[in-house]
Length: 378
Image (cartoon, rainbow, N blue to C red; front, side, top):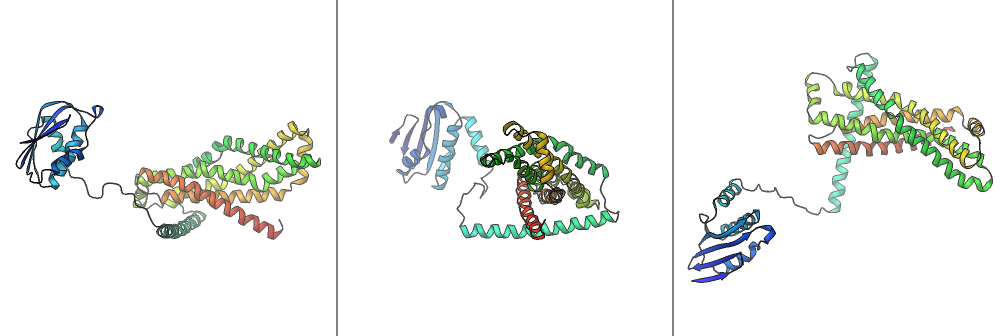
């Protein structure tokens, strides 16, 4: 009879039979020997056919013992060694039986494999093509819904439209005020650094007025609404998609585009120009604060210079941009919400994607409108 002694176990072998005596505490805090140390010992007995446990000397144990035994039994199964578990404590036997009751599903473990760069580019291209087709279908459905609305046949509740206008308009005044005033102050401060060198501080009013009226008022308001309202639209519709509420509307013969998307689209289309006008004046006010405190330019001089430098057409261009941005933000948010999957993570992805898509569309549309205005001499 050969024996191998370890501080946690002892192996006794007699022909094809091996007895494993477990000793002491088998807890993670006391240190668990790796299962490979025992499997190496079993490899020295190539004619082993039967493994039996003895636990009379076993004291305290926890899941560390279970992990050790599961790996050992799996090794014995691969080596076609019969295992007798009757010598283990009753609690250990029950847990082993429970662990073996449901085998591990194949492919359940996460595999992290590197993907070739060409495959990544191909997947991104396919996804962009699919999204582009879905977006065109979505825009087409919106156009049909608008036609039905003009004909008085669109099915949506006026209360929903008013609720969305309240959420997209008055509820956003606080953040629009803060951002617009700060942007106006930043424009004035940056302009003051250079214009002060030439003694032309008064022209800060021109810089801030034109910048807010034509670009920054509409742009900053649109970005705020993309992160605030566009993401909310995507999350709301995405949650409805998860709860199958949109499927229920289709089952009842109600168009989700008319009932859900149209009120949100109209709400942003109506409120964005008004928010843009408000942001323009708040930005100009921010520039006036900097001019009065840093450059000794009175409020009267500042606003008189703004009135002379900024014509009405500049405000109109900014307001038109704001209306276009509002349609784009609502379309992107609702599109990502309708396109959402059926899980909680899909809702988060839809909200994030709505913000990114909205900002990209805003920048592209702003560049296009600016070029058109430049060509037309506006």
